[in-house]
Image (cartoon, rainbow, N blue to C red; front, side):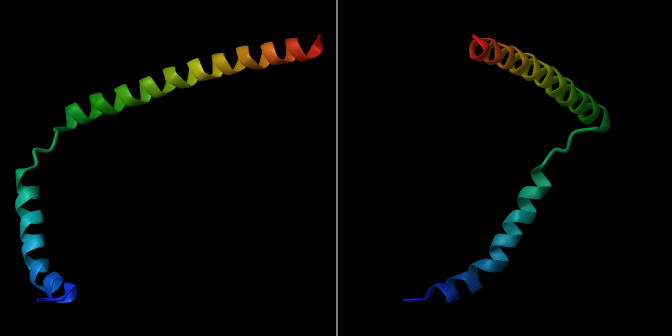
Length: 69
C-alpha cells in the first residue's frame, strides 16, 4: 500500500495537465459583454443600496417613534 505522500507525488503532474486542458476549454467573454455585465452589476448594486437605505430610514424612524411614546 502506498502512503498519501507517494500518491500525491504521482498525482501532481497529472493534476496540472488536467487543469491546463480545462483552461483551454474556457470561452472568455468579449470586451463588450464584460462591460455590459459590469455596468449591470454596478447599477443593481446602487439600486439595492438605495432600497436598503430607505428601509433603514423607515425602520429607524419607526423605532424612534415607538421609543418616544
